[in-house]
Length: 503
Image (tube, rainbow, N blue to C red; front, side, top):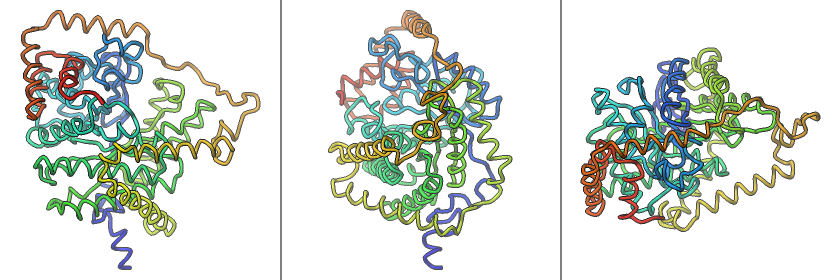
């Protein structure tokens, strides 16, 4: 019994294995947050309004690759990528179009952005001001998790040390100016999408989280200024029970690690709050309607694991951007779980499952083993520089691929449950693709912006930014000023490239 209380306890109580709130979804449902962004800001704005009308309770912005990498839409490296995997945002004018008619004082917005997070956050603040919203009242999240970019995704710009400095700048600035803003979403999602195991996802994500807390500590920030505004972002993969155990044990390990190293006074600093997205890498182009079942089961695991917000993937996303019908079906999946399934009526329906508790203990052993290895290397930043997590993930991904090819790991529509008439090919309707003309439209808008602004003000604000970067002052005030003067994302990034160098 003592062991049970120590490891499981009660919902809302340390070590939070059973959830971070005593009443969980009986008091408040998870946020239904659909990830969306494509084409121009105006295209995406129309989608947001439909999602909000359909019952989405929080927005989640997908940015295109040039925006993620600090390139304007007219840069030669942006060719063919503008508006493809997300929305193109070159300036504060684009950001204003993105949220036209959407009250930023009422909506919570999550932005999946990392190396240019400081710029997009500045643009969001300026748009809120233009709407007449008190900036201290805006709510949302910037992902701002640069370490996982080196591990799994690749949209970094600057070396790790300089990137961590920008992360800490955002922590410090938000502490003083945006008290309701989540300053980082430490992301295991992309680590899992790159092919990691569940154990690796938890280990590397929590190790990244610790690295950020240590960077904040080094900056002189109190643990209770940073940790309560830190969120996490996990994948929910196929193995139903393993995923539920993964979420439970992640909360427990994090609470113990943070208490042992930082001893915070505020209990919120120990609570691992997380967003979940169902696993994009599990979606198949073959027999794509089966993806509705995959996503529904993954979403159920996330809810039983105690997530705070959830995005459900659309059934056609292995083929392209989701069509409207598929996006609405994905949202309805969450609403079914919330309103019809009954799982939200019980605080922790799986409490006391012997199997789940044993599985959680096994995952914990694996995670702590990785922690020992990472600490022996010298911490996560050093481990990334030595490519330790990268190699571990590559090895896990390779092992899984071999199991699929041998038929040991079965995937319906790929190597099991094949439709003879169809072979391995899928049958699907129209796939949504961005209009090839949108790149030209975006470039023309950018040219018009550059011709209509005060170039003297731009030069002055970019010079101030350069000096702040060189003098190790917080970059946020200079970035905000540059954004207000209508400097572009690419221009701001170029100033920092010149000072920090490229990685």
